[in-house]
Length: 431
Ligand code: ADP
Ligand code: MG
Image (tube, rainbow, N blue to C red):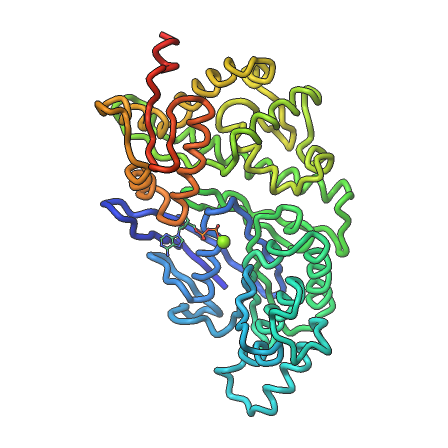
């Protein structure tokens, strides 16, 4: 499977198009299990849909066995995060559905479905309906439906992220066993994930994407023999390395933003982190030590490493912390913040928002310019939508409002959905 110079742009309302994927070159060979990693919203699902032929690239070439992929790619089948089962069909019928376009007798379809059901551990549940099954069993059906087609390439889009920790682990092992012991004829697996550990546990190779737009920023071999132990040093070293790459992206992207006055600066996508979680995290870092290994920190907090990523990203983005080689430490500014009083913190936070994120200056400017110092949420939504697309804009604005309210840069009234400036203006006091 080969992607060369693949670009994907989506139309956004307004004059701008949003570039989601940029110059993607990836080749996947027979025998490989490749994980595609990247922050959420980076374009991983889009990339997978392009490979499956469900979405067209805007430019570049996508070939499978040397042939351009123009329609649904016949060599692949897909497992979805949301399982995507038909609730009115039984397990057997859902799995058989994978074969609906195959030229087989109904008896053959039936037999193939039964043997796959057996293989994915659903023996005895052939006649059950999805609602009778746990999440883990539903995903087994999803995997069964994909495998029954005997695809050359199995595509999986965050297949385990909707499951609880134990179920996910159980399913990872079972799938890996099918793959490693060649119980399935599948020749390659491409798995999209935002889980670094998951990638290092399962895959032979990790392709790491940046965001806004997604480019390939690293392509890393994972040469560890199976079965892998998460506590092994070689394992944690690889996780740390990928972690550093993912957190470094942000700095690189900021560095290339034009900063001169007068030029419009690009909208910087915010990690979805409530201000309270961020301040709590900074306090914790301050209490702990000078430097902390992120991997250990996640472990001690009983966090998935990936849940920590957005918080770390927010701390970096606002200049409160830096990450190098998997270790996080507070900056001078971060230390000052952790030690400050509640009011001082708000002021420090305000300074950082205005300094690092142009959108906050812009909102202030708009509100300041209005005689009634009010503006509907909808107005700013439109502004953000142009940069990040409709889907992400609401979440972005929620975070902006949360950070803005916390820092008292502006206020927000939920019932009228209006952003406004209060009469007592903290900015004026500061002057
Ligand atoms: P990921 O799977 O990495 O979370 P996606 O591929 O789902 O990311 O989305 C990447 C970006 O493309 C997001 O900003 C999303 O809003 C945008 N996007 C995805 N599909 C569409 C679409 N059909 N129209 C416009 N924008 C889209
Ligand atoms: Mg996705």
